Image (cartoon, rainbow, N blue to C red; front, side, top):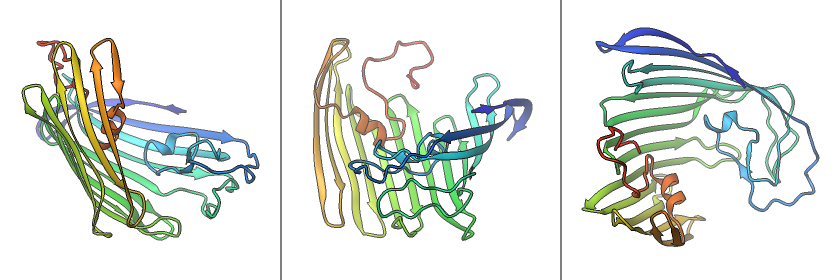
Length: 288
């Protein structure tokens, strides 16, 4: 895994900026092992995105370890505030090239038929200090069509206050069903020491709720924090399951109950733990 970072001074919208150019190459070699007799319990094909394209395995789970002889090429350019280092804008593109055929698959899945992956492209922009937007596109060169796209905006005026809205589209393929979803997520103060958290994910194609997360958090500011969260998500066309999380956390001592923190971090972009509070006057209250 190797890369370079070039910098130059520039201007954007009348403001001084530092622009970077960051090429990156990632080569991966994993020898082939026959795994066709191994059962599959909790493994699936991982989502294709900028995090996965630089990972060591195309599968999420340990029931299959894919062989690999491939290189990923990416190019990123950022526009940074030269005084604070805050990222004002970012453009990224990446693609993976395969040097060998695929042999390790999940039962029923077709093998990869092309020597290169889809293109990934992403554009991010901070419109103000609290409002930002980002769009990501996955383009299939075999059919010359967009396979997947996401458009989202996020409003974060202060620490523990975030509101995110996104639209996701996924084209139907041989192995993946099409999706078209609207996602609204938030973490917001309701009253002194009380915070509301939630996510509403609605499928436009199926006309149903794909996932709902709702809960409240309380921070005593000195001794403890309490979290109560309900999650309901679809597991089949007409079936859904519900989970309930209740946790008492004694600051600096112990946690009792089932923690919803991982669920909240996955569901709510920019979610922040409510305790302990950051030190005042440091200038980083909204980031810690």
